Image (cartoon, rainbow, N blue to C red; front, side, top):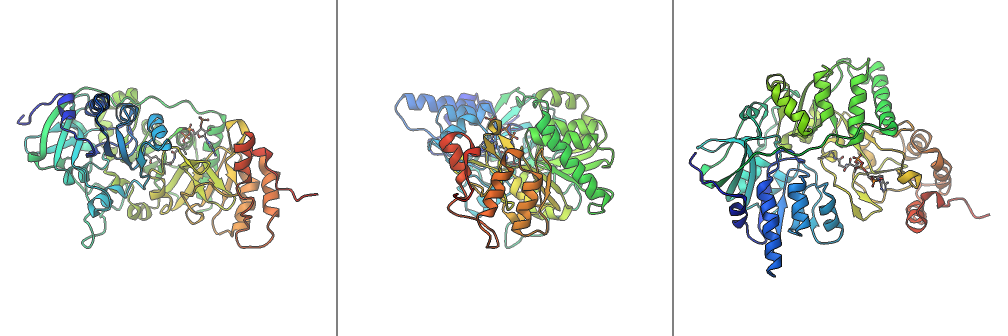
Length: 497
Ligand code: 0RQ
């Protein structure tokens, strides 16, 4: 191989204070590991020597403990875009040490090409293979690698021998043109391939190869609990009814599903349904539950941005690669999350809310208006453009001291115009075609926990007039009751005696 071999420390030595870095990967899948750990170590050494050292980090989505975790612990991240889920980084963001730009995941690559985001100087890309003429086989994610490699001055490759070179056949790499030359994206079915198996870069940009042999380090999800299982069941009963009414075609529609325990429970319930036929998925994150559904023949194929499966599951897949490489397609997120394609394919989009208000606005990112949890991720790419947009959440949090249904959300991610269905363990609210007052009635009757029903009816009674009957003086009374007393049930909307 013609490229220079670098140790992780030698690669990290190339990185300067204030540099814009673009990483491969999406979630912990396909993210570089050794180089980023070495950059964190370098940051600690620089800080110990009294010198400033922080980088600006652009990724696909969240990363891993070796990246966001290690860099955050070393206080080595100044700007961070577009999504994270690291407890350490979250602390730095909410503490004001890291400037976080939370954005739709389909936007990052094009915004950087348009010049709206700073251009990355260095791309660090995890690869399963690299040829002398610059053909990269990505590992377990498409991410933003094509754009970061195109714009970067230099590329560091982490060649990870843990992953088989045959992964190339899963990838479908395609980069849309930029305005004013844009053309329709020629992808008209979830199993269409429109691009190439490998990512071609200018080999002159490759400054070195860091050799690794390391799994993505993804743990298995917790088993479902009664609440997540009931949410999953409610989603599936609703979809079965829609199918019976002919509102969903008999052949069913492709599914997009978010991440986390609720998403896993929804997928498991879809697997158990006797009414829903085997289906395709067009999504971003491919979790363990999707692979289980493929093994059972319930999911025919899946196109997504990342194979975010546990290490054990990935090892099993690699033993049966012939089965999976014809059924799994990995795409860059500009394609997997592209609103044009989401709308064309008619996706059923299922994502998770932190908070929903009586009129159907959804908060997926913040606690009490100011504390960032993870970020909007791809939920908005899908929600606005889905055939059917479903948001799920438990009706209560923190043992009942918090109601997930509130008069007004404390942060807006998805507006009332983008939310069709809300599902909690209590039931399903169908908001389609309804005015705000009727939406509130539907949500209180079907989704609110019994402890909070009267309270929210009392809120509705405060304002007899107005299209959206808010009372601005009282809209955050439940939030304030929690902040002041530790329990939203202490809010009081009843008229004075
Ligand atoms: O905290 O465990 O300390 O009690 O919020 O916890 O278990 O991480 O929940 O895995 O289902 O994730 C919305 C965060 C849910 C995720 C979110 C507390 C609650 C608990 C939640 P504790 P878990 P989940 C795909 C698409 C946005 C982006 C998205 C997410 C913790 O799904 O980040 O969908 N989604 N992207 O107790 C205060 C409330 C609360 C609350 C819950 N109202 N107020 N705390 N909690 N409700 C991803 C990508 O795009 C890559």
